[in-house]
Length: 379
Image (cartoon, rainbow, N blue to C red):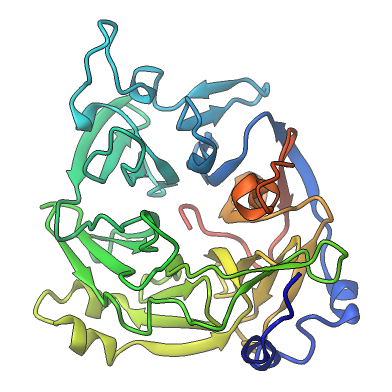
Protein backbone atom coordinates (compact mmCIF):
# COMPACT_ATOMS: atom_id res chain seq x y z
CA UNK A 1 0.00 0.00 0.00
CA UNK A 2 1.27 3.43 -0.88
CA UNK A 3 1.41 6.12 1.75
CA UNK A 4 -1.41 8.64 1.55
CA UNK A 5 -0.09 11.92 0.21
CA UNK A 6 0.11 15.04 2.31
CA UNK A 7 -2.19 16.81 -0.12
CA UNK A 8 -4.86 14.21 0.44
CA UNK A 9 -4.55 14.48 4.22
CA UNK A 10 -4.92 18.23 4.01
CA UNK A 11 -8.01 18.03 1.84
CA UNK A 12 -9.52 15.31 4.03
CA UNK A 13 -9.16 17.52 7.08
CA UNK A 14 -11.38 20.06 5.40
CA UNK A 15 -14.33 17.68 5.26
CA UNK A 16 -15.17 18.03 8.95
CA UNK A 17 -13.61 17.02 12.21
CA UNK A 18 -16.17 14.24 12.66
CA UNK A 19 -16.01 12.84 9.13
CA UNK A 20 -13.86 9.81 9.88
CA UNK A 21 -14.21 9.70 13.67
CA UNK A 22 -15.27 6.53 15.44
CA UNK A 23 -18.14 8.43 17.05
CA UNK A 24 -19.48 9.13 13.55
CA UNK A 25 -20.80 5.58 13.25
CA UNK A 26 -22.68 5.90 16.53
CA UNK A 27 -25.00 8.45 14.90
CA UNK A 28 -25.85 6.37 11.84
CA UNK A 29 -29.31 5.07 10.98
CA UNK A 30 -30.12 1.44 10.33
CA UNK A 31 -30.27 -0.09 6.87
CA UNK A 32 -31.57 -3.43 5.64
CA UNK A 33 -31.12 -5.73 2.67
CA UNK A 34 -34.02 -5.23 0.27
CA UNK A 35 -32.95 -7.71 -2.41
CA UNK A 36 -30.06 -9.87 -3.58
CA UNK A 37 -29.12 -10.13 -7.27
CA UNK A 38 -26.71 -12.24 -9.27
CA UNK A 39 -25.17 -9.16 -10.91
CA UNK A 40 -24.10 -5.71 -9.74
CA UNK A 41 -26.26 -2.68 -10.44
CA UNK A 42 -25.44 0.98 -11.01
CA UNK A 43 -28.72 2.86 -10.44
CA UNK A 44 -32.33 2.45 -9.35
CA UNK A 45 -35.48 4.33 -10.24
CA UNK A 46 -39.04 3.83 -9.00
CA UNK A 47 -42.10 5.03 -10.89
CA UNK A 48 -45.16 6.64 -9.24
CA UNK A 49 -46.94 3.25 -9.46
CA UNK A 50 -43.97 1.59 -7.70
CA UNK A 51 -42.34 -0.18 -10.63
CA UNK A 52 -38.79 -0.94 -9.49
CA UNK A 53 -36.38 -0.41 -12.41
CA UNK A 54 -32.59 -0.55 -12.33
CA UNK A 55 -29.50 -0.57 -14.56
CA UNK A 56 -27.12 -3.52 -14.37
CA UNK A 57 -23.61 -2.18 -13.96
CA UNK A 58 -22.00 -1.84 -17.42
CA UNK A 59 -18.51 -2.44 -16.02
CA UNK A 60 -19.52 -6.11 -15.75
CA UNK A 61 -20.67 -6.32 -19.40
CA UNK A 62 -24.19 -7.56 -18.64
CA UNK A 63 -26.32 -9.10 -21.38
CA UNK A 64 -29.36 -7.30 -19.95
CA UNK A 65 -28.65 -3.59 -19.58
CA UNK A 66 -31.79 -2.51 -17.68
CA UNK A 67 -34.09 -4.69 -15.59
CA UNK A 68 -37.32 -4.48 -13.63
CA UNK A 69 -37.83 -6.28 -10.34
CA UNK A 70 -41.42 -7.45 -9.83
CA UNK A 71 -43.03 -7.65 -6.41
CA UNK A 72 -42.56 -11.43 -6.40
CA UNK A 73 -38.81 -11.00 -6.94
CA UNK A 74 -38.84 -11.97 -10.61
CA UNK A 75 -36.64 -9.83 -12.85
CA UNK A 76 -37.59 -8.92 -16.41
CA UNK A 77 -35.64 -6.97 -19.04
CA UNK A 78 -36.80 -3.35 -19.25
CA UNK A 79 -38.43 -2.09 -21.38
CA UNK A 80 -38.27 -5.46 -23.17
CA UNK A 81 -35.85 -8.18 -24.26
CA UNK A 82 -35.48 -6.79 -27.79
CA UNK A 83 -33.92 -3.57 -26.51
CA UNK A 84 -31.10 -5.49 -24.81
CA UNK A 85 -29.57 -6.94 -27.98
CA UNK A 86 -27.58 -5.09 -30.65
CA UNK A 87 -28.23 -7.76 -33.29
CA UNK A 88 -31.42 -9.03 -34.88
CA UNK A 89 -32.34 -12.71 -35.29
CA UNK A 90 -30.35 -12.82 -38.53
CA UNK A 91 -27.19 -11.55 -36.85
CA UNK A 92 -27.43 -8.10 -38.42
CA UNK A 93 -26.56 -4.99 -36.39
CA UNK A 94 -29.72 -3.07 -35.57
CA UNK A 95 -30.10 0.73 -35.86
CA UNK A 96 -28.43 2.47 -32.90
CA UNK A 97 -31.69 3.91 -31.63
CA UNK A 98 -33.38 0.52 -31.31
CA UNK A 99 -31.27 -1.06 -28.58
CA UNK A 100 -29.34 -0.33 -25.38
CA UNK A 101 -25.55 -0.46 -25.42
CA UNK A 102 -23.90 0.80 -22.18
CA UNK A 103 -26.19 2.10 -19.44
CA UNK A 104 -25.33 3.53 -16.03
CA UNK A 105 -28.54 5.39 -15.23
CA UNK A 106 -32.31 5.16 -15.66
CA UNK A 107 -34.68 7.71 -14.10
CA UNK A 108 -38.43 8.20 -13.79
CA UNK A 109 -39.75 11.67 -14.57
CA UNK A 110 -42.24 11.31 -11.71
CA UNK A 111 -45.13 10.67 -14.11
CA UNK A 112 -45.38 8.26 -17.05
CA UNK A 113 -41.88 8.29 -18.56
CA UNK A 114 -38.65 6.48 -17.74
CA UNK A 115 -35.53 8.02 -19.27
CA UNK A 116 -32.47 5.84 -19.93
CA UNK A 117 -28.99 7.30 -20.50
CA UNK A 118 -26.93 5.16 -22.89
CA UNK A 119 -23.27 6.17 -23.11
CA UNK A 120 -22.71 3.84 -26.09
CA UNK A 121 -19.29 2.57 -24.97
CA UNK A 122 -19.65 -1.16 -25.63
CA UNK A 123 -18.30 -2.54 -28.91
CA UNK A 124 -19.41 -1.75 -31.48
CA UNK A 125 -19.53 1.79 -30.03
CA UNK A 126 -22.52 3.92 -30.95
CA UNK A 127 -23.48 7.57 -30.58
CA UNK A 128 -24.58 8.17 -26.95
CA UNK A 129 -28.28 8.76 -26.50
CA UNK A 130 -31.23 9.34 -24.19
CA UNK A 131 -34.18 6.96 -24.52
CA UNK A 132 -37.66 7.96 -23.29
CA UNK A 133 -40.11 5.11 -22.65
CA UNK A 134 -43.84 5.48 -21.80
CA UNK A 135 -44.48 3.03 -18.96
CA UNK A 136 -48.28 3.25 -19.22
CA UNK A 137 -48.57 2.75 -22.98
CA UNK A 138 -45.45 0.52 -23.05
CA UNK A 139 -43.97 2.22 -26.08
CA UNK A 140 -40.98 4.27 -27.16
CA UNK A 141 -41.58 8.02 -26.97
CA UNK A 142 -38.33 9.32 -28.40
CA UNK A 143 -34.59 8.87 -28.76
CA UNK A 144 -32.30 11.89 -28.41
CA UNK A 145 -28.77 11.32 -29.73
CA UNK A 146 -25.81 13.19 -28.23
CA UNK A 147 -23.72 13.77 -31.36
CA UNK A 148 -20.03 14.47 -31.96
CA UNK A 149 -19.03 17.71 -30.29
CA UNK A 150 -21.56 17.20 -27.55
CA UNK A 151 -20.08 13.74 -26.97
CA UNK A 152 -16.32 13.16 -27.23
CA UNK A 153 -14.35 9.90 -27.53
CA UNK A 154 -13.57 10.45 -23.81
CA UNK A 155 -17.25 10.84 -22.88
CA UNK A 156 -18.67 8.58 -20.19
CA UNK A 157 -22.17 9.92 -19.67
CA UNK A 158 -22.75 8.83 -16.09
CA UNK A 159 -25.86 10.34 -14.53
CA UNK A 160 -28.44 13.04 -15.18
CA UNK A 161 -31.03 15.31 -13.63
CA UNK A 162 -34.37 16.05 -15.27
CA UNK A 163 -36.28 19.33 -14.92
CA UNK A 164 -39.78 19.60 -16.36
CA UNK A 165 -39.93 23.19 -15.15
CA UNK A 166 -37.01 24.13 -17.42
CA UNK A 167 -37.67 21.44 -20.04
CA UNK A 168 -34.08 20.32 -19.57
CA UNK A 169 -31.98 17.25 -18.87
CA UNK A 170 -28.47 17.89 -17.53
CA UNK A 171 -25.95 15.06 -17.85
CA UNK A 172 -22.72 14.55 -15.90
CA UNK A 173 -20.00 13.40 -18.33
CA UNK A 174 -17.10 11.97 -16.30
CA UNK A 175 -14.75 12.10 -19.30
CA UNK A 176 -13.05 8.74 -18.63
CA UNK A 177 -14.25 6.45 -21.45
CA UNK A 178 -10.78 6.02 -22.99
CA UNK A 179 -8.63 6.49 -19.91
CA UNK A 180 -8.89 7.62 -16.26
CA UNK A 181 -7.94 11.24 -16.89
CA UNK A 182 -11.17 13.25 -16.63
CA UNK A 183 -9.63 16.48 -17.94
CA UNK A 184 -12.38 16.82 -20.58
CA UNK A 185 -15.27 16.18 -18.21
CA UNK A 186 -18.31 18.42 -18.70
CA UNK A 187 -22.01 18.97 -18.14
CA UNK A 188 -24.29 18.36 -21.12
CA UNK A 189 -27.61 20.25 -21.27
CA UNK A 190 -30.35 18.72 -23.43
CA UNK A 191 -33.61 20.38 -24.45
CA UNK A 192 -36.25 17.69 -23.87
CA UNK A 193 -38.57 18.93 -26.63
CA UNK A 194 -36.18 19.82 -29.43
CA UNK A 195 -33.32 17.46 -28.58
CA UNK A 196 -30.83 20.33 -28.95
CA UNK A 197 -27.80 19.74 -26.72
CA UNK A 198 -24.87 21.82 -25.48
CA UNK A 199 -21.57 20.87 -23.84
CA UNK A 200 -20.84 23.13 -20.86
CA UNK A 201 -17.98 23.84 -18.43
CA UNK A 202 -15.65 21.37 -20.15
CA UNK A 203 -12.20 21.32 -18.58
CA UNK A 204 -13.01 23.86 -15.84
CA UNK A 205 -12.17 23.18 -12.19
CA UNK A 206 -15.90 22.85 -11.54
CA UNK A 207 -16.12 19.50 -13.35
CA UNK A 208 -12.58 18.08 -13.54
CA UNK A 209 -10.78 15.98 -10.88
CA UNK A 210 -8.14 17.30 -8.52
CA UNK A 211 -4.69 15.85 -8.81
CA UNK A 212 -3.42 14.73 -5.42
CA UNK A 213 -6.93 13.75 -4.29
CA UNK A 214 -6.85 9.96 -4.77
CA UNK A 215 -9.43 7.33 -3.92
CA UNK A 216 -8.49 5.46 -0.75
CA UNK A 217 -10.40 2.18 -0.56
CA UNK A 218 -11.06 -0.01 2.49
CA UNK A 219 -10.18 2.83 4.86
CA UNK A 220 -9.05 1.67 8.28
CA UNK A 221 -8.67 -1.97 7.25
CA UNK A 222 -5.63 -4.13 6.50
CA UNK A 223 -6.69 -4.09 2.85
CA UNK A 224 -6.58 -0.27 2.68
CA UNK A 225 -5.12 0.89 -0.61
CA UNK A 226 -4.86 4.03 -2.68
CA UNK A 227 -5.90 4.36 -6.32
CA UNK A 228 -4.78 7.26 -8.47
CA UNK A 229 -8.18 7.76 -10.10
CA UNK A 230 -9.01 10.95 -11.98
CA UNK A 231 -12.78 10.81 -12.39
CA UNK A 232 -14.61 13.99 -13.39
CA UNK A 233 -18.13 15.19 -12.61
CA UNK A 234 -20.17 12.22 -11.43
CA UNK A 235 -22.95 12.92 -8.93
CA UNK A 236 -25.74 15.25 -10.07
CA UNK A 237 -29.13 16.06 -8.56
CA UNK A 238 -31.87 18.68 -8.73
CA UNK A 239 -33.62 20.13 -5.68
CA UNK A 240 -37.37 19.92 -5.03
CA UNK A 241 -38.08 23.39 -6.42
CA UNK A 242 -35.98 22.67 -9.54
CA UNK A 243 -34.05 25.86 -8.78
CA UNK A 244 -30.57 24.52 -8.01
CA UNK A 245 -28.54 21.77 -9.66
CA UNK A 246 -26.02 20.22 -7.25
CA UNK A 247 -23.08 18.25 -8.61
CA UNK A 248 -19.86 16.61 -7.47
CA UNK A 249 -16.55 15.55 -8.98
CA UNK A 250 -15.49 12.13 -7.68
CA UNK A 251 -11.85 13.03 -7.01
CA UNK A 252 -12.46 16.40 -5.42
CA UNK A 253 -13.60 17.70 -2.04
CA UNK A 254 -16.38 20.11 -3.04
CA UNK A 255 -20.12 20.00 -3.63
CA UNK A 256 -21.03 22.73 -6.09
CA UNK A 257 -24.31 24.11 -7.34
CA UNK A 258 -25.61 26.30 -10.15
CA UNK A 259 -29.07 27.66 -10.92
CA UNK A 260 -31.08 25.70 -13.46
CA UNK A 261 -32.21 28.99 -15.01
CA UNK A 262 -28.58 29.68 -15.89
CA UNK A 263 -28.12 26.24 -17.44
CA UNK A 264 -31.28 26.78 -19.47
CA UNK A 265 -30.05 30.16 -20.76
CA UNK A 266 -28.68 29.33 -24.19
CA UNK A 267 -27.11 32.78 -24.51
CA UNK A 268 -24.65 32.05 -21.69
CA UNK A 269 -21.24 30.82 -22.78
CA UNK A 270 -19.35 28.28 -20.66
CA UNK A 271 -17.00 30.96 -19.31
CA UNK A 272 -19.96 33.05 -18.13
CA UNK A 273 -21.71 30.02 -16.68
CA UNK A 274 -18.58 29.01 -14.76
CA UNK A 275 -18.71 32.31 -12.85
CA UNK A 276 -22.19 31.43 -11.59
CA UNK A 277 -21.18 28.09 -10.09
CA UNK A 278 -21.18 28.23 -6.28
CA UNK A 279 -19.32 26.23 -3.64
CA UNK A 280 -21.88 24.57 -1.35
CA UNK A 281 -20.15 22.16 1.04
CA UNK A 282 -17.11 19.96 1.59
CA UNK A 283 -17.21 16.21 0.98
CA UNK A 284 -15.06 13.06 0.72
CA UNK A 285 -14.48 11.03 -2.45
CA UNK A 286 -17.94 10.02 -3.64
CA UNK A 287 -19.90 8.50 -6.49
CA UNK A 288 -23.72 8.53 -6.39
CA UNK A 289 -25.63 11.50 -5.06
CA UNK A 290 -29.24 12.42 -4.24
CA UNK A 291 -31.39 14.88 -2.29
CA UNK A 292 -34.54 14.67 -0.18
CA UNK A 293 -37.54 17.01 0.03
CA UNK A 294 -35.89 19.09 2.78
CA UNK A 295 -32.68 19.67 0.80
CA UNK A 296 -30.49 17.15 2.64
CA UNK A 297 -27.85 15.66 0.34
CA UNK A 298 -26.83 11.97 0.41
CA UNK A 299 -23.50 10.79 -1.02
CA UNK A 300 -22.14 7.31 -1.76
CA UNK A 301 -18.70 6.98 -0.18
CA UNK A 302 -16.13 5.04 -2.18
CA UNK A 303 -13.57 4.75 0.61
CA UNK A 304 -15.92 3.35 3.24
CA UNK A 305 -18.97 1.06 2.97
CA UNK A 306 -21.69 3.59 3.56
CA UNK A 307 -23.77 6.61 2.63
CA UNK A 308 -23.00 10.07 3.98
CA UNK A 309 -25.19 13.11 4.44
CA UNK A 310 -24.80 16.87 4.16
CA UNK A 311 -27.72 18.26 6.19
CA UNK A 312 -29.32 21.38 4.77
CA UNK A 313 -29.04 23.21 8.10
CA UNK A 314 -25.36 22.64 8.96
CA UNK A 315 -23.84 21.74 5.57
CA UNK A 316 -21.34 19.62 7.53
CA UNK A 317 -20.71 16.16 6.11
CA UNK A 318 -21.09 13.05 8.27
CA UNK A 319 -21.67 9.34 7.77
CA UNK A 320 -25.41 8.56 7.69
CA UNK A 321 -25.71 4.78 7.29
CA UNK A 322 -23.10 2.03 7.02
CA UNK A 323 -22.85 -1.73 6.54
CA UNK A 324 -19.67 -3.76 6.16
CA UNK A 325 -21.10 -5.42 3.03
CA UNK A 326 -22.19 -2.16 1.40
CA UNK A 327 -19.10 -2.30 -0.82
CA UNK A 328 -18.90 0.54 -3.36
CA UNK A 329 -22.51 1.80 -3.26
CA UNK A 330 -22.67 3.20 -6.77
CA UNK A 331 -25.85 5.26 -6.54
CA UNK A 332 -28.47 6.25 -4.01
CA UNK A 333 -32.00 6.67 -5.32
CA UNK A 334 -35.61 7.06 -4.21
CA UNK A 335 -37.57 3.86 -3.78
CA UNK A 336 -41.05 2.85 -2.58
CA UNK A 337 -42.43 3.49 0.91
CA UNK A 338 -40.25 6.49 1.70
CA UNK A 339 -36.91 4.68 1.56
CA UNK A 340 -33.66 5.50 -0.19
CA UNK A 341 -32.06 2.58 -2.01
CA UNK A 342 -28.49 1.79 -2.99
CA UNK A 343 -26.83 -1.13 -4.73
CA UNK A 344 -23.45 -2.43 -3.55
CA UNK A 345 -21.67 -2.81 -6.89
CA UNK A 346 -18.43 -4.29 -5.40
CA UNK A 347 -16.27 -2.46 -7.96
CA UNK A 348 -13.45 -2.19 -5.43
CA UNK A 349 -13.30 -6.00 -5.42
CA UNK A 350 -13.21 -6.28 -9.21
CA UNK A 351 -9.87 -6.91 -10.94
CA UNK A 352 -9.30 -3.37 -12.33
CA UNK A 353 -9.60 -1.89 -8.82
CA UNK A 354 -8.08 -4.79 -6.87
CA UNK A 355 -4.53 -5.32 -8.15
CA UNK A 356 -5.78 -7.54 -10.99
CA UNK A 357 -7.55 -9.98 -8.66
CA UNK A 358 -11.33 -10.41 -9.12
CA UNK A 359 -12.93 -10.98 -5.73
CA UNK A 360 -16.37 -9.58 -6.54
CA UNK A 361 -19.11 -12.21 -6.42
CA UNK A 362 -22.84 -12.71 -5.88
CA UNK A 363 -24.94 -11.91 -4.07
CA UNK A 364 -24.99 -8.25 -5.05
CA UNK A 365 -27.15 -6.61 -2.43
CA UNK A 366 -29.61 -3.73 -2.62
CA UNK A 367 -29.88 -1.88 0.68
CA UNK A 368 -32.51 0.56 1.84
CA UNK A 369 -32.78 3.09 4.68
CA UNK A 370 -34.95 5.99 5.78
CA UNK A 371 -33.78 9.52 4.92
CA UNK A 372 -34.21 12.48 7.26
CA UNK A 373 -37.08 13.83 5.11
CA UNK A 374 -39.33 12.24 2.47
CA UNK A 375 -37.46 11.42 -0.75
CA UNK A 376 -38.27 12.78 -4.21
CA UNK A 377 -39.28 10.51 -7.09
CA UNK A 378 -36.79 10.65 -9.93
CA UNK A 379 -33.90 12.00 -7.83
